[in-house]
Length: 151
Image 1 (cartoon, one colour):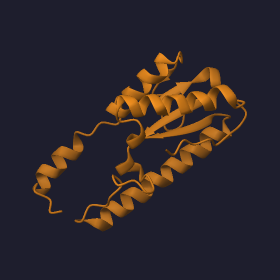
Image 2 (tube, helix red, strand yellow):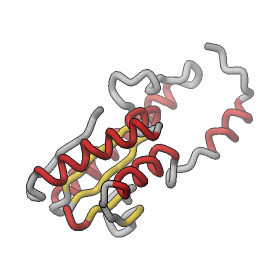
Image 3 (tube, rainbow, N blue to C red):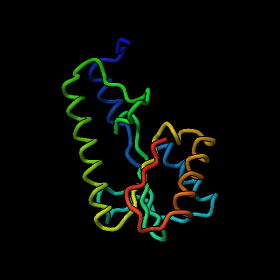
């Protein structure tokens, strides 16, 4: 597929992509809240500033965009055709940072859950993801580490 935007237009569009309060994040938060979970947002005192912090369960949730965080096997996790070296390096740095942050949080005793954009982008999908996460929280001791939701 040919990019119909100029480099300046593409740059302007990409710069507007936010890292907080994204649609998938809001959908998952609403679904978790409906299930009775209470949480803090954007854990500023924690490594990586997790999107959702469930302190009662010693659990944090990252709602990752499939494109930016390279959701393996997802059709959204494509690599742009132009400037591929730049993008490949950027994606490698993102994934390495995600792994480093996950390890740091686990060392601090936090359980880390990753919810992917493609699994939370609609009300129905967000409800399903929230129910899977609720199952992890309610049926797994908080001392278990490294649980991930990958879809």
